Every structure is written in C-alpha cells, then in structure tokens.
Length: 115
Length: 116
Image 1 (cartoon, rainbow over the protein chains, first blue to last red):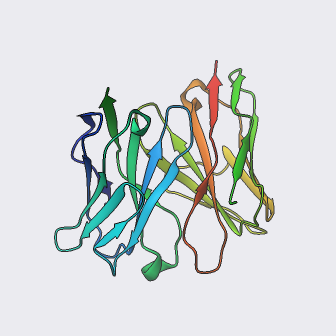
Image 2: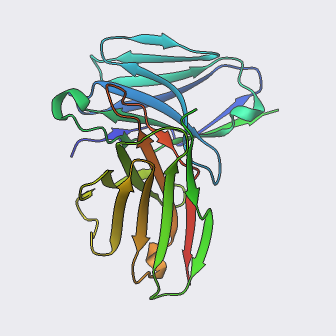
C-alpha cells in the first residue's frame, strides 16, 4: 500500500556539521508533510512542516525541501548540536483528497551527534 | 499553548486485566484525537481516530473490542486496553488537532504499557 519511508536508519555526524535526513513517499496525493523529532521515551515533537504547493521552507536552523517530482522530502539541520540527537520521523497527510487528518509516519532515522 | 498530556506515563499490569490511558488537551479544545502505538525502534502506527461525541474509527487490523476508545469531551479521550496480553506491551501516544483549517497535530508524551 501507500507508505512513507526512509533510506537511512542511522546517521552519525560531528557536532557543528550539517545534517541531512531523507524521506521518500509514494503517494502523490499527499499534500502536507511534517518532520518530527522524538527523544527516547517521549512523544514526537513538531519541527517543521511544508505543504505541497511549496518546495522549500526554513525554520530556525532547519530547512525542509520537498521534491514532488521524485516524491522526496528532506530535513536539513544546520550546525548540528548534541541536543539534536534523536529519532526523526517524516509524516504525510492526504487531507485535500479525503479530509482525513491522520498522519502516516515514515520508519524513522536516528541522528547521533558526536561531540 | 497546545499542550497535550497523557496519564499515566507508565503502567505495569498483569495479563488479563484492563488498563485505561487518558489523553487530555490542556489549553485547547480538540475536535479530533488520534491514538498511535509504537513498538521499540519502530515508527508510530495509527490505531484509531477519535472524534468527540461519535464512535472512533479504527485502522485495519486494530480490534475495536480490545482497544476501547471514548472521546466524551473536547478535551479528553481515553484508550482502554481490555484483557491485556504481553504482546500489547508498547508505547501508546495520543495526538490532538484543534480543528478548523489547521492540520497540525499536537502529541502527548506517551504512555509506556508493560503487561506481565
């Protein structure tokens, strides 16, 4: 069935470097995408979102890029810090088509920041 | 703003007993709440969508008689795991949306259920 997936299960970076976490989605009807950060034993924390009418959105130290042609989503974290260590999930929603607000989550990428 | 709480944060119960988990939106009214389950090192899997005042909509493969959901008010949804078994041990997370045109979901901190 339709799914959202990730290529890399674990990403290890040096403190201060930039991190890029990727996500592939398969449903072209998806119109809303979100990146979440989840620390161990906690619920997901919203990082940034993007709608399908955009291809880039920037936040504080984070940028989300959306390539609808290849159904690819990425999260860029600038100057990665130890506090960024967590599991990152992309999620998608197909609200326009169905009015459904439930999210479909990708499999997650663990980001490890080495001091 | 937009804080969601869950209670309890951790619970251990014996096999065959039932456990209730509460999800509350503390500073907003949530027309819709969602319940997710997350096994170790895995992603969140949607279990059901809970709308205030109506029956929950369950995802395929989720037993509605085992996972009872009640959304009695705009700030509270409960998930009851009935006749729990060790395979029900998991991290249960709820989320809530404010309604209107917003699709942003606010997640609770999760409840760790261990069935012995």
